[in-house]
Length: 468
Image (cartoon, rainbow, N blue to C red; front, side, top):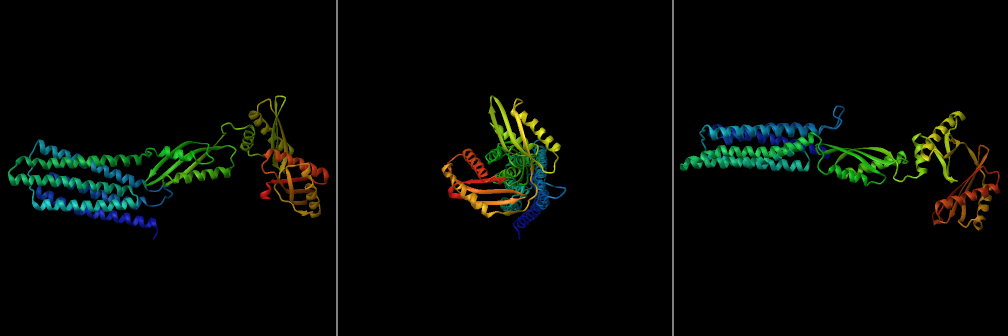
């Protein structure tokens, strides 16, 4: 049996036991109310009558609330527990109002004959024991398997212990008054009823506020700020723009909007979203929806702004560079377009991108865009091992000219569509900055092309010597 199935079974059993106990107590209190004429016992009978209604509602809510989400209830059915708890609260408060009205009427306008007995006192003591037992049992189940409805039931029945105790004191005082000739003690019965009403109002107001907050989606104090702070601490998040949450039973639905760098790829942004979801789930059991807004980093450099502008148009660019010459900015980049596009179509894309980049770089800037085909097919080729060995040997003579170079290895030469393409790995000084390594590899590529003019393209992969 799965844990969720066991939880539903235990909650149903607790609700059924509560219904049985409420039925027994209601029967006993009705019997005592008729036999003694006590308003305190009558108020408790009404209270137990509502307990029975509340227990039935709890049983139904437990059955409904644990149903999974469906097409008509996309957030599940857990709100039904909050609704049932609210109904219980309303019934409690209506009961309290009736008890207050009847108690004041007996205190101020008419004297009601109360017929206490040792049997009534004994049965009231038995009822206190039953209430205490069922309240403790339901409380244990609601703590182990969180349920608003069962929690409301447990709180409800725990107050019955106190209210029945007050009624017991009242009926005992009336019995003593009649036995020892103390007439003013008959007022303890309506006073006990007022005390019961006070307990009901106090408990009902606390329970009512909590259930009403759940129904109105009031966020628990401090939770929204805690979630916001947790999301802001996640790697890749620039900031949190909004956090919204609602509760259904013991589960939360969280809607959070975060800002991420606008140059972030879709996969990187998705990974950031997953990290935010996991971090929030560590705070509360929740279903999290993360909405991402692309934003510029504080102090974003020009090249990142240019890349973001190209990404916004869905264009792939590389070989991006910017130079200041005589106070004027020159920007160059390579734009990849569909290899089947006509020159007119490709030029339109480049011109539109150029207009956007002028807005980023400034109207006085000069933009030069090189158009090249975006490869979509993989052509066949053949290996040229002899030429590969000669190129490797030549590069390994260059450390005297380029002290950054340590050795060359893994040279591959291929003839592809009548072009000779070369790739190789070069170990270089690992402590040097990337821009210096890039300049060295570009110079080595030029020397290789000079020595072997038949080469169409050479690609050098630089790496630290201990990772080659």
